[in-house]
Image (cartoon, rainbow, N blue to C red; front, side, top):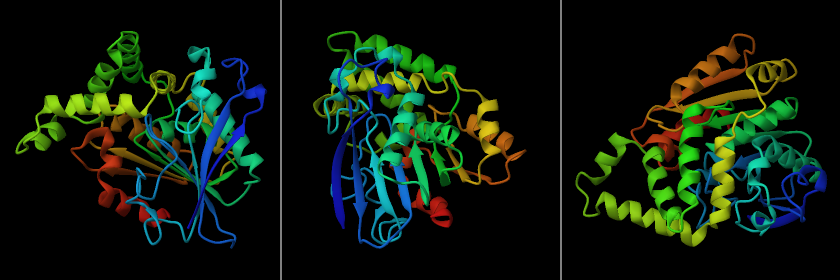
Length: 315
């Protein structure tokens, strides 16, 4: 298996309104042979990155040889969300965080696909923020993708998420606010049932667990990157509406799979179910599944067996 980490300078037409210096996009190309294969684009969540498989892969249980996302069947293009600080310093060049949008990220990702001459046999999958970006990419180019799989995500403005990200941003303005913002957010990435189950018979305390997550993220993720990703999460749906998505569906043959998480406190499952049902009224190529879990929003990073069972028929 070949892993290629690469970077490209993004044309200024996509970035000049939020950055005054060159911005790079980083991505990993994973292939096992030179034989032609479909491409699966993977988009990560808020604090994720393009390393989806291998020893440090955040989805290594699902991506690899003979796994549900089979690298013998697909070439994998895993893209770092612009500004996440993983393989570039682009976050340092973004001077107007408030001006960058999910639509900007979608257009930059689509430019990358075109620059890599990936124009057919492409599917896309994303969870959380990555799922929202995937939806936006489909809206911008509804004829490009064979499959769109959205996990724990919705493409529309959500006042609950805007409230959470507003308070996160307020915490991030303080000297020690980074760790507190992360600790606070962990409660929304999980939920009461999952938290209580986790610590019922554990030697670790909830307080120690929260402190660990606050400190560990600070060590691996630049504060400005967290501010950028938090802003993007809160700006999902800005400038978009359902009519635009319904209009896009008229041009599309994409198989759309919506996977909500039953205990999700961030992207409420009811909203995803309602959107899938509304889309299905005029677009028949959409399916909804519920990932049943007590682990909250992060279930797609924990409940690998259950997610595998849902994904298998579509991959």
